[in-house]
Image (cartoon, rainbow, N blue to C red; front, side, top):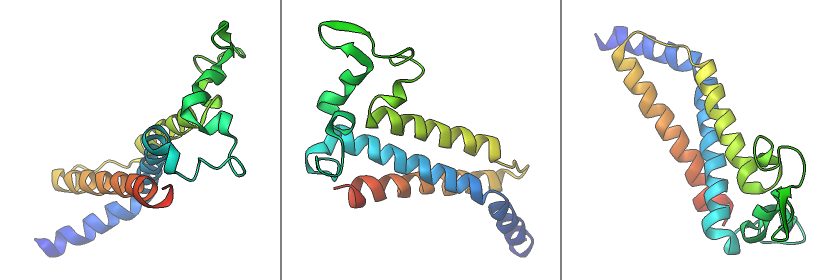
Length: 142
């Protein structure tokens, strides 16, 4: 039975490799988000020479969506507090990237009837997301 199952599982994995990559990129995006939110001060983003602080520093970047916060809380440009908020700061940019990668992974996923293969794909996708997150949050950005 294992001899029959293994080729099917490998074939299914190869067919869904792009899905695994998309989930990995979603994990990396989430790692950037959490780095910005929880460890900005010791991250690579806290470098005013390489990174525009008004976009990357979460203590001030959230104000970018407004005209002149706190005096004028109207949108800086049409959609800056709704659909185009991802253009206003690094955290929202990577939140949008994470969601796009997840949506692409759903679109690209080629379903399989076998519950065992579905379960294995769940483990692979979860591991891929966790690895992407950990690489950004624990290694690359701090």
